[in-house]
Length: 297
Image (tube, rainbow, N blue to C red; front, side, top):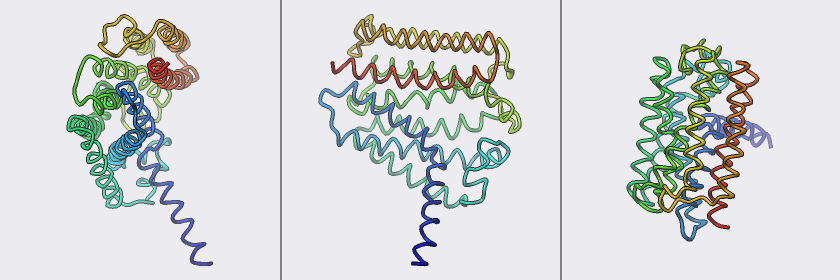
């Protein structure tokens, strides 16, 4: 009984640290985006394929997040939001984190290659840009947000490519929706965590300040997101279509998103930034599943 009592907390702590290392919530959003893209492309969806895509997607996203934490271990130690991660706290060694990251990366790429080579290729591109471009640029220039938006936009179109095996106007639209959405989302986080980021030498905001110029860019990129999100109703996106009722619903949710951007511009407060961050997450999840539901009803 004594041995069992001692092992259980250790196992529980390892699971907790594994979830922290792989940023489980972020990785799951990647998985959900990929599944939505898959369902939009599949004529007859397969539960087994959804399972494999989920496994491969989490493996690749988790590996990327883990490599990110290895690279940023010193930065994470300076920020209140990230101080409790397993590497800066000393609960996990660099060697262990690297072994986990490498294993997840291999598993993820092998599974995605099983769908088709292009799926694995774009998965690899996403991981490379996130770890080797976005991560080091964060302490150098706010342009890192643009670079980070590329791997962040790939999962939605990756699900589509896992079915079709090719690029097309449809996958381009899915990419653009999530690409432009990431600017208001990232900047809302950057505004909310500005002091914490400054402490670590990270500049996320386009003007490096929490000011109206930054808030105006938030509004601008949100407008682009709304236009692209509703545009499939016009028949400009190939086989990716949207009915008028669905487009209206997308528009309504988009206006709520835009209103919170305007409130940030008006008030320039952390509270408005927090609300915008939450609304931005609700927006992207909502439109992905509006697209999916609209296809099947």
